[in-house]
Image (tube, rainbow, N blue to C red; front, top):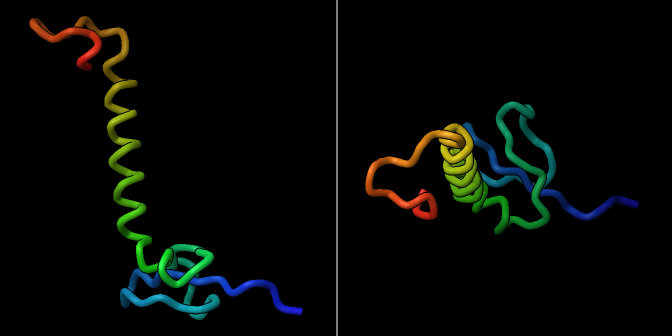
Length: 74
């Protein structure tokens, strides 16, 4: 018995594939639904932005705050 369908976003041609049809280096996924796979790039961009913000805070840890900036605002 086959499991639930998996969907992949193809980075090369911008389409959603049901099941793994292309080389893994071209795919993002698997996702549980076609709609979720269609939002793959938006989800990745939001996650990357969050990580970049966290990295910036981590890299600034221990540095004195900029003049006129409260520690809470950092």
